[in-house]
Image 1: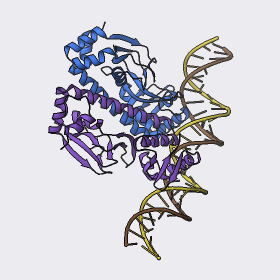
Image 2 (image 1 turned 135 degrees about the horizontal axis):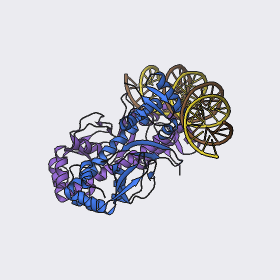
Image 3 (image 1 turned 180 degrees about the horizontal axis):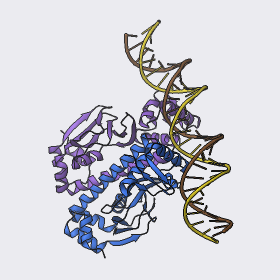
Image 4 (image 1 turned 120 degrees about the vertical axis):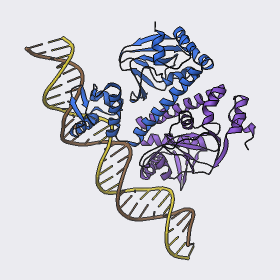
Length: 210
Length: 210
DNA sequence: ATTTTAGTGTGATATATGTCACCCAATTAA
DNA sequence: TTAATTGGGTGACATATATCACACTAAAAT
């Protein structure tokens, strides 16, 4: 059972009744690193609030391709599940746990109910959409205007911001996230190494660009 | 002065007080086709509700490049201006009138006020975000996974849905919207002509693909 | 009527990226 | 200890797109 204090720390400024409602109605779930939490086209039955760990959100192709968009961290909600819940739609994104995670699953029937009952929930939903809308804009900016070298740098910087300057990813991992091939990433990383931006190791590299 | 009836038709299911508040506080503005309504980085002073005409939303590059994302039609609001208003941020998009337009400009100070006062406004804001978030996801899907030929088809289909099967755009217009060059579009359109998808004219073409 | 401009067609070439082939080294499994 | 697997390096080549050059023609301006 999740202590109320965890909730009030992660989600400050909510009405007291909202914390209680969540503790009563939401289910605390766990998932191992690597688990797929949500697939494109899947019907959503509950909203997802992250309590512990990190989730990665992807756009998914029909042919198996993936494109990484943004991270979800504790204290954040998956906007797509709020969408789906509220309007009974299907997921347009792929969500994967990158670390072991804990999250609250709130059955859809409470979405609309709480929107009516709790002003702070309403604001939280708006804030969630707003911030994710902005993340998507950034992603579009990258893909529409930048070549792979700059997109790779942007990608690495997002990683470094999340997990620190030691990047524990293989070239293949990165290639998958950027919907390109391993060879392309290997060559671009090699260039970064020549430029003195990274130190390369097997299975990882260090971001040392100032 | 905008008749209340126009408002109730374009924005059904709002509280009566909200219509009155808008009629009292919003300014009805007009703009000619081609006008830039919002630039990236610009501070937003009012929310935009479309009354008449069509607006195009773009992501804008530092170097002058543009990428078309979606249309805004009467009865819709520009999500970005709701963002900016509420959280005092800057525009992350470029908005242009594609036809002569009329829109309501609502000064930012009413955003938060009305979120508190009118449940229907709150829902409207959420609905606006949700639908635009989904538009952005579609855009990402296109640029992350598709080559220019498919993106061009997707682009034309959006146009046809908005304005009908006679596409009054020059190759250069399209190239600008897709952040590519005129030659690329000319060649791809030529292929579509060979495939029997379009009939080409000067300054326009007809979409006849079934 | 003549000139100018805008829209389009198209070859040639450059560059970015995708794909295939194959090698080597580090790690893991047998 | 040996074999198999995984991560990575790199050449060769294919393809998509960008860029430059220039020609042609319809429409607009003079």
